[in-house]
Image: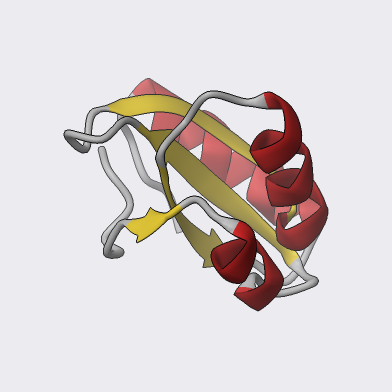
Length: 83
């Protein structure tokens, strides 16, 4: 199940605009294929991805806690979504 958010180009401007809060993010290639799903403090995670990753696009959703982000990411990878 994909996040219901628009793709953004993975560049410095996007990373700078990412919230400094926990969340779940998807990384995608140029055609919008999801390459990876992960969680963490969004801005910190995306800085690392920008520096060392090979994704072209990103989309994310914020959560209130890292624990919720971890749970949501696991559900997302399994193709389910729990509230």
